[in-house]
Image (tube, rainbow, N blue to C red):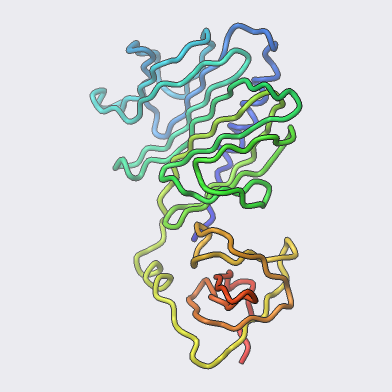
Length: 272
């Protein structure tokens, strides 16, 4: 699985918080910002408003948004209803491909909460059941609501087999919930590479695997050969496990509790 870093997503989330702080807590207006690739025609409540990139201050409301192809205004590339929240920004960022299945992007909105000491994060994805990691810790699957998050900068990562990893920096604000709706990008792995990954070989010689040093001091063992699978255990550098199966990128090992898990071949040394 390739790791797909979205620096634009990071900028968007940080910018969103910047707008939040620039506006008075009692401001009556919110901000809508839309960025697309390629540029699209923005229609708000059935009224054409211009071409992306687009940014406009608006009164609080639930706004109907359509994004139309420039070369064919009958082609609606995306549409939905999003809230405009006072003192906050609503962001839409999308990349459109030749087919709908090639589209990917994110929608970010803020909503007020009653917890004035912490923030929260609501993460949903398409497809759903993506593994959610916050600051390197697995939290569960999308859709998921994470509450009582300390204000400040955090790292959000979504993993799903067959799709590129999404990594973004998020800034959590006390008293607000950040709502992130993410459409994942399909993986660009070739069919041949996928075949190799999907067809592991059995270990018939009783070989062992030694866990190598990692940047975190531990290594996730997952339920399948890919970062989109859930974590089943953590193993430590120097520990040895019986090798059960292997492919080019993943090693299946027998864990101490008689269960099984897959670890990255990058951090496992096979020994006779």
